[in-house]
Image (cartoon, rainbow, N blue to C red):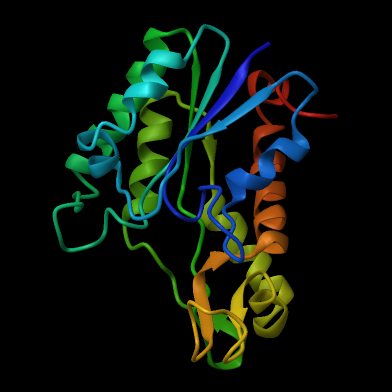
Length: 219
């Protein structure tokens, strides 16, 4: 049976409770026998994931008929050694993963980074991730790569839910509730289990629009 491989950052990885990435929730939506292998890791960019050797076991393990989900951008925008430029190095790094999948006969899929929760007055939201989502969309169109526009989909979901309901998707801790956050925590990037499942639903809905991807999923 085929496998779905996932690479990305903390919004994707399995994490430890109360934090969960959408990759943790994805197995609930795949067909019996399909394996989800989530290699996403917190703090990684398209560049650092490769340079640290984290992609090596994925490259070695992928087989013909598998699918590779690729979501980066959150940390590519950081001004440190993880940084990539959306017009040059970012698409170049992404293409390394795409080409590696294609060489194995696996199907690469690009995902724009899931939106952060930054509401402003009158129920509006700030746009997050700058030019990175645009760069992914352009690369997908240019190289004929299936695309899940998770940035657009998550932003739409948040605006439909409103500020308070959207906050229920994310990790929010009262003072004293968790030993690692004695003063409490109001996260605007990372999901709880409920949020991870809701974001995974967005990914699944996008994948179902591509017949080759839909073959991995429950009807």
